[in-house]
Image (cartoon, rainbow, N blue to C red; front, side):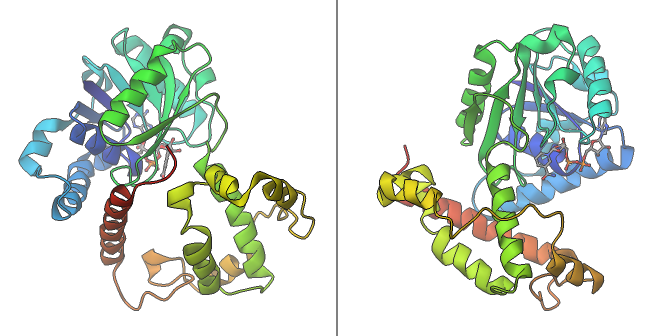
Length: 312
Ligand SMILES: NC(=O)c1ccc[n+]([C@@H]2O[C@H](COP(=O)([O-])OP(=O)(O)OC[C@H]3O[C@@H](n4cnc5c(N)ncnc54)[C@H](O)[C@@H]3O)[C@@H](O)[C@H]2O)c1
């Protein structure tokens, strides 16, 4: 399949790599020349991580043939059967781009936006509505398999199914949602978890490592096997129903900021990039820490694949 990836930033370059690894021919563009120029090196570094983990045998020579970069949008869209939109999260920018795509892309091309929170469908010209969808990925998309697929309101039913089959064929885990909601599923759940976590932290109930211990050793241990809905079946639905009504655990109040985060930022502790955040990384470089995270994520994914989830 011929794919055009529009935007070569944090997500775009990685999405170009993912589609290439999935067997597509990819053309990548960005209006910011230095970003486009940097993309091959970033893809090469990600490819090296996958190669070291035994996930691929492809090297840089393959990459240079599988993903080409183009400053010109028309050239990028030449022959495109799938247009992956991964530009800045700005409705005006996306709207202007979709108008150009309408004039330049082949008539049958599927448009798949990677937007995180915007509803992209009102921004897409009428002529393209029949093949307009969202395919929303998580970073880094070459390690996180979830892809949220949402058909636009006037999209042909075959389009989300085609995207689902394409990404499932690449070993990803696409889910087809019935309608668009900002943040999709995983980010919405994570937002609620964040509210509770920062309430517990700011109210001094526990420190950061105790909260993480509760998440790692309690909450999330069962999740890869049971998800949330099957866990409710194991708990028993009457008890699950009672827990929903339990006034002891009210929903956390909406908060726009955390005092604990304010304090750390004021100290220059901004996270992995500065060597300290909630944790002290003891002089280890961000590159080293990201590489360790990626190696461990790959090992965890392999173990989970071997064990198998109980959720069909
Ligand atoms: N960062 C994430 O974790 C993440 C995850 C899922 C989805 N997304 C979504 O993916 C999209 C891209 O996010 P990002 O984090 O890669 O942003 P980014 O800022 O890293 O990259 C966006 C790129 O788009 C380029 N661009 C802007 N207008 C353009 C145009 N008209 N044509 C071509 N390129 C153009 C910019 O120069 C920039 O390099 C956003 O819609 C975002 O919400 C991001």
